[in-house]
Length: 212
Image (cartoon, rainbow, N blue to C red; front, side, top):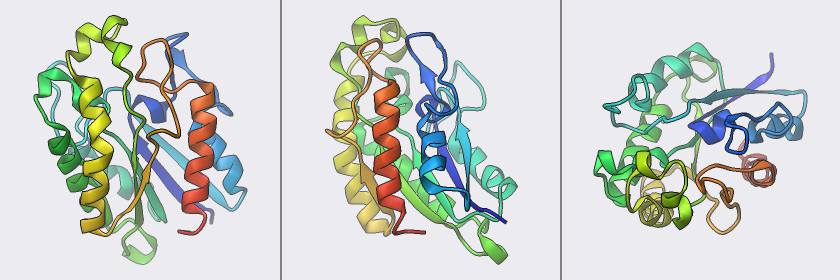
């Protein structure tokens, strides 16, 4: 049986391509690039959903709250070794009225739940890695996503890694900060481009090769 890794995230894990408004193909998405780097011994499960939030219900769209979904999701893919969580970009939306620290708190709550879901081998708990996504570019507000996202999303996403790192240290959860290492695209400034997917895959691989 292959060693299973679940990548749990939003549109940047799903592979949204802002230039086509479709999905990047396999071989481009960071999840599939990670699978190639890990090799035949591993299976990488892509659990990305556009618009997904860590712990809040979206009043405009259904089924986006990760907290209510992650337990059955992980159990359905069991037995698994590692859960990689990369969320927070959608939580910055103005309609949720969350601070950067609130967003980090939500992700910490979600990662704690993942760490205590008996989806590992023989009912044990899986390892968890939390990734702080690249910050949203300030220019997002003048792009097509600006009206939907609302104001000050870039400020919240800029501060998120600092708080997330602090809370993950308290929780004892592995953490990877992509800030300054991976950038969003220059179309809507909140999604990865092809280069971003490639860089992220390498960063994640270098982080988890010593965890597995």
